[in-house]
Length: 257
Image: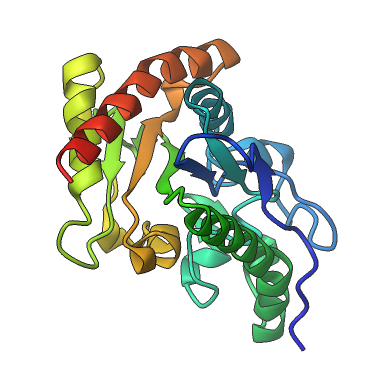
């Protein structure tokens, strides 16, 4: 029998009135037992390889401004990246950018299965149950994931400040993302791009593909450069910018349905 205990999704505002469900898969840089720090020092545990700095604070700010539910991760993505399938090399990477992750270097299939049972399955089961409940109540969710990315990747600066990403499983999956992008262009001064700095081709839409696409739910993934949300004040300021963007995008999406 598969064990379903462990580290479930953290859900804030399960009864929130908005159809919007915000998800922050890389919210935490916690390294609990039985895995501990995976051999990383304190600086590496705080670095972007372990989590998405600023993403949870921004997501909470958006949830508060928009009356939305928020689902977020309880542990570091280096223990299990919740936006990767359990058999993906990126789910428990032995190396992330320039960092070695000693605790993932010799992970066995049994270790991988144990982490999936303790972290991946409880999170995704909780999110699936929330989405199913909302659909049953007539509040078909709009799923928006919130991430941050580093300003420099392998020594190369990134000019993009806001990326809006969509899955590409079937025609029409880009509709909400394009409305978010158009609203960002119209309402902010952020350097905003579609499918940057990542796209579905990089495997970053796993969660959307699991939870939004099967139900035909509108969805988008927000990627914010993390130097723009590196303090609580910056997180709040970005939430002030992006909440109206999402409001307008949803109105335009629903108006065009």
